[in-house]
Image (cartoon, rainbow, N blue to C red; front, side):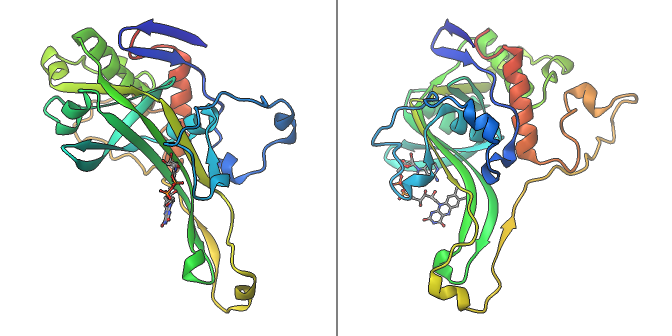
Length: 280
Ligand SMILES: Cc1cc2nc3c(=O)[nH]c(=O)nc-3n(C[C@H](O)[C@H](O)[C@H](O)COP(=O)(O)OP(=O)(O)OC[C@H]3O[C@@H](n4cnc5c(N)ncnc54)[C@H](O)[C@@H]3O)c2cc1C
């Protein structure tokens, strides 16, 4: 682990566990279980993050929370301005126990968040539709995280440039170096904010159809219908220069037919291994 302290954001770099998005639906390897840390690092349990509804689905350990976050490109960020709640979808990335996102310097969301207001960042993956024998028992298999903290801006052109490069490289390893460098005007037009995760919860449903015993005799088709977000075939720009391929632009992991959450997990691990980031 490599810890660096500089400025407002402490960045902790830690290699995440190997990519295995199927883990939630598969029994853990018994050999791996023997070597599991009995007390893995966890987020503090607070009145804010304690899962009350179906608490057996709640998890607070870093590994589970980070695995769900790292499998996503998209999050939703909730915040309140003048008593009005908003919930904005946006791309984000993680470095250690910090989460970062960005947008236009004119963004109302970012300008408000940069004042240090409390935010709640959520990620959810839908893994299956669960069709039961009554409406009440219909469900969704999912992996979700709610992370709480206070947003703070990334300030200074050099730090913003590093963060902008980090944002590109987290998703597309090595692509920032292949791109035309951002101009001073583009850096000025971009606002980046981040938050340290103060506390967080993960909630996972990964079981099959569950009905009341007397309903199993009811004649209706039931099933678990798996859901996946899968990459399509790239549609190359008609003005593409000759001799270029996807791998040269940091897109080696993005092969058509792959699951997006698997690609996100793989590229997050590659980014963590590089040990570069927002506050180099
Ligand atoms: C894709 C998807 C679809 C869902 N559909 C439904 C639905 O149709 N109906 C329904 O009732 N519920 C649904 N849920 C579950 C829902 O997110 C809540 O967990 C549930 O409604 C309980 O809410 P609550 O406020 O009573 O939770 P509480 O247990 O009171 O919440 C307390 C704390 O637990 C944690 N927590 C609660 N829910 C989650 C979560 N999902 N992920 C991470 N942390 C959590 C948070 O830290 C929260 O502050 C869905 C979840 C997902 C991901």
